[in-house]
Length: 182
Image (cartoon, rainbow, N blue to C red):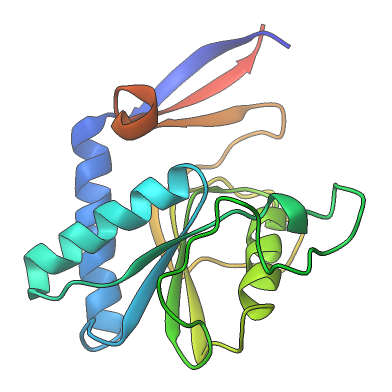
């Protein structure tokens, strides 16, 4: 299906400000950041988690450990069930999950199925003390009862539209756009 850009809703500066604001909200809500761990869902969520860690360090002087989570094997739209390894080949968690306060990070929250897969993958590795959710864009249309704790931008969309997040680390530029079928 061919898509065309309908609207650009965030540019590089807007993305930067959203990440900075979310970092401050995370610190405020958690009364500091020393006991937190960030987990970015591959692919763009991992880059956003790294950026949040840098923003938190700049604001608080605290370096938060950052991990990445590959939820491919946990998706409910794939056959085969759950893997025994606790995550896909892109998973890298340089800390224990059990007993930790985790911030799960993704680029777009849509149906909630990716987040559900991420929760399953994390809990297979141990029982965290808590898991909070940070997303750059919340576009609505939830199929599961999942709500983000931190949102860069709420973006009401129709179900036929797609939200495209581009980040410099993998796309060469930072922007968020709404695309629709031609």
